[in-house]
Image 1 (cartoon, rainbow, N blue to C red):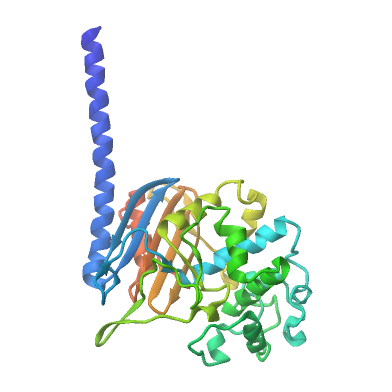
Image 2: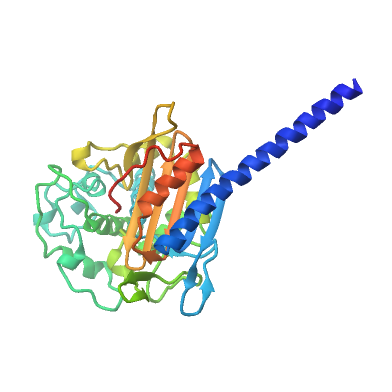
Length: 368
């Protein structure tokens, strides 16, 4: 009996060592792959890969401040660009669940100063789905100044524009949709967008290192943004108040994992409400839910496809990507403070390494 127990003990030890070796092997594979981008594409930033709530890989690369020679850490904050839209959309859904908003009421119910020529037939549903007909960017309407702008000023700019198509008849990705959605949040909560997002999302989820950036409210631990050019790497950043509700949030990989995990449960929002965000349209209408892009992914070579819910961000000096491979509960987060490099390729490749797919399914998609 003693010998049998001793043999079983040795088998258990061997299995434990094998599992530890496999985990280390996966971590090293992920690290080596990211390092190839650091060396060839000059990537710098932070990468996190998690299976369910368990972090299997988290590492920082390059500099948070090149001039000061300060290295990035996994706790650095990064501007996340258009990934902000996911947060704005979910904040809207939170207010819907609280009975304070209706997705299908006219937007002018909540923004009375909106130009009637733009407001006719326009609802929150169409704004969040990018089916409003509004122009893609404020840059087409105004020259940005080196100062923060108010929601009132942004609404005045939007009111000077014209629709590209009848609301609901087509798809056109537009930051203006989410500017207006943020104004709805402000008007319903009677708080500015930074305060409302803190109360609706960041505090409930324990996202203590996340917020909405303004020139008079710069985060203490944010990495600087950079751009590679013909003459080298230079500091390059936006005035993000012009990106109200569409690109003005900063966060960390740790906070973004808290956000990701909250969308699997019922504590933050009911799954009935959350699933509205993941209800995609046809490819002709952008495969877009409410603040999320929806598409299929190959789980493994021998398995069926799963559902990927994601969003990315691109702005001066920063890139972001958050991919939720929901059928495998695999999360890949890439935050970068340098551009340009193929962040969508890197994100998909990390997924394939994590799932053991050997990169047989190199997918391409448009980064927003």
